[in-house]
Length: 176
Image (cartoon, rainbow, N blue to C red; front, top):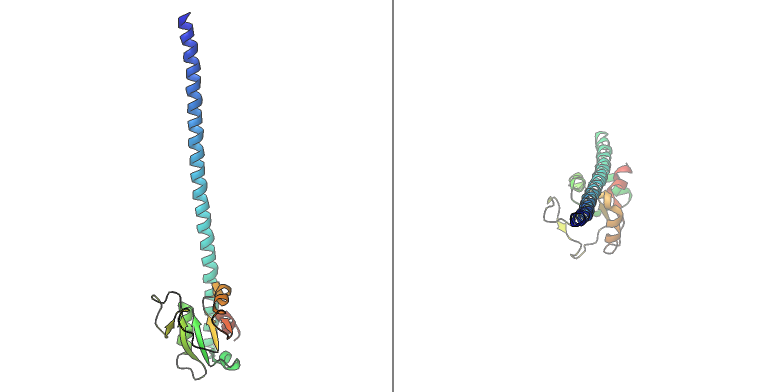
């Protein structure tokens, strides 16, 4: 009789350990699943960032291509500034497009780039005098924003400091 009691107890204890084991397996699988979901979420965000970067690079490429075709035809950006009576400008963003704009207008008798504005002032290419928004603003006829992907946000920020037109480089280049 005692042997059968021990046997029943052992069976019920074995069932308990089996349930605990199954719970442990389920919890482990849930933790792995959560980790995989987090990983997939990070991958998704990275892919979205790459897609945004690619879209911005395509916009830069299109602007540069249009600009180059304009140069090949013997035209430049000066007529835009002359027509709009912009004699002095500031260039916001001194990356590739900003530096190209400054070089194009260097020595122009129509328009002068008074200074460049860039958040990354330490790493910027020193083509023109640089200013931060926190510095005293020197009045200009227009500000040309070359950071085209963030134009609307930058324009809102610049409007706090400037009373002149704030334009995207796209507007200038595609007006030709």
